[in-house]
Length: 202
Image (cartoon, rainbow, N blue to C red; front, side):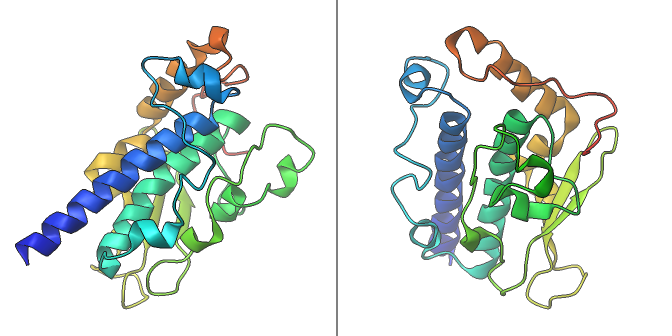
């Protein structure tokens, strides 16, 4: 049992690092320029990072799969935010990561897809739920309703995953975007926009 738990934690950590590197590369206008930036992980070859999502998640139990995907969503949404200047509205939902929402269809700022369709549903076959909070500290929440499919104690929430919950905090988003703005001279993210306060999704 300890070996299984350890394996799941290692796999979860690996996928977070993989997606972090992928999103950093996606935020870069030039993969070669991103690779030359010492503080930025080297970009990987394409959004598939060399593996299909099913291969990365293989071997994890249902709960660990859900937590791993919740971790990944934090990075997917950061990329969307960096490119478009906002997060998806609640009506647009996580589908906005897969295809440009109506409001952005005429814009060149949407540079997705930021994830594959496989990530939209949790291990129990239900869609992950995205809630736009726009609170002073927390911008959004993502959750899975867990195995019972109803709101209950077994729900899995991004806000409860310490490693990635920080990326839903307004201060952390501001800091993340600011760091990319500081690399504008190297064309890392020339069109990044600061987070307004209060931030609105529209």
